[in-house]
Image 1: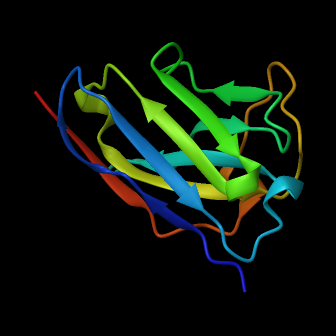
Image 2: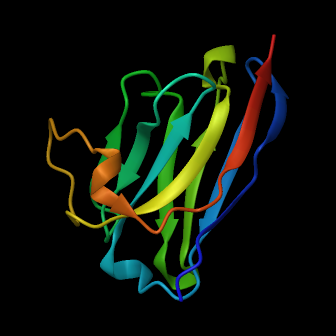
Length: 129
């Protein structure tokens, strides 16, 4: 049984940093591209950043480019999201999930929520001013 668990969220001041982690016991981790999504109150869940199965290609939403960095350690079955220069608008529940459609991210691809599975319960990130 696959269980995806996110951690590392919390309350941080604007301009600060957080590092999210995601583990997936039971998932053949290096077979899957993985993604981070977020959902703010009253808004739809959106793709934040994704990384290919090998780690060689990535996707970033325009709103986080230059501030967030996605990485993975396949030996540890762990996905990371380093978030720097946090803004109030980054406040959301952050989710980790496996891409069931692709293993590699070509330029101009836009990952969609419906293409992902094995969702975790999420970790809350709150950025205060």
